[in-house]
Image (cartoon, rainbow, N blue to C red):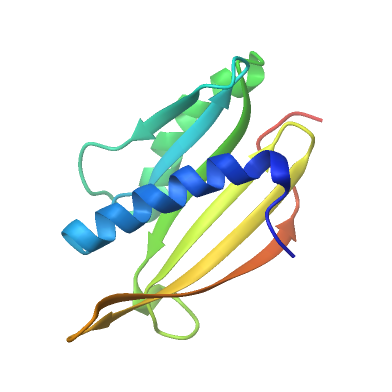
Length: 136
């Protein structure tokens, strides 16, 4: 399974941002990108570290009114998951992509820090999930 063609540009932009942050800072704060009706990508970022559930709630607080009004047609919410929060005890990035067509994809990638080679980005695992943001 791969990302649907209409979500690829959004995913690629989010992945590029995550990679830049991790290579420069070693981490990133949860963030979201949304695609407006005009095709422009809108960033939604936090200004300070927060617990993951609080961060996601803050992002959703900004996204949901725009979804309800029809101003945005797709979203990606990117969340870093620390090793202690994952099944395999390895740092992970979750890309939660959703489109107004009621399609939702979770893309999950593991990260490993190497002393000699910087960060190693694992393969991305994809799975469909039940849509949550866009109204039925």
